[in-house]
Length: 334
Image (cartoon, rainbow, N blue to C red; front, side, top):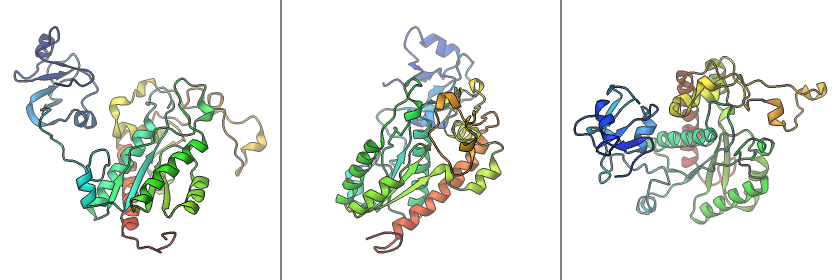
């Protein structure tokens, strides 16, 4: 049997007895002793479904009521999601070809001391997949592509393991993705962007002059501004209350909120550059000592869910309308 991270087979010495002492079900095949695994996303990742032969426990405690589930590697317990490219198959897509492709695009960078490097990729993927699910339920022909996990992080390269791609690299990636879709008759592409350092406007302008495809950019942090203003008390722009709340909703197992820095932002010393309309890249480590920008201490999972739900509803509406659009409809479908 494949063993998930943080887990051991109940029968394996020396782990079997501790698992049983912790209260694993007598018929359990597997014991997970990771105190963060009590999370729907984590359970789904190991193929969990309601039954009794897999006992999920909180680390070091008697068998709490955390979860009792069944895992059988020979029986799939989750339905294939036709709108997710990495899960569906050629027969399904051949019989029901999509009209709209959705490309989540994130970044790999530090997010204060408490959020994972994959925060942007996780958020972009979650927005895209949930919105596509809602849109498909309304009849949209939509497919979510694999996430691009790298973005432009040139000002963060002094921070360990930050990965940055340059604008020519991003252009080449986007061009080849769009070119591939056009060859298959898919002429609508929506980029779900979760990283402020990704600036797609020049890229899209160039590529739409080269290829017969409509490319739409959806920056989640600019969507539903009324909801964001109503939900959050002190939003910033990186690893702040907003992003932390989203991650507490989406992947609480990856959040170490007790370790978060204050997210202080040190203003430019040149007064004239603080005026509206002026911009220059921030030397990130000098401006943001803990890499965050905005106080995360007020974040809650409830806030994150409210914001997430509003974003995916907005995105789903756009996907439905794009799928239903006719050739020649404005803004650009040739």
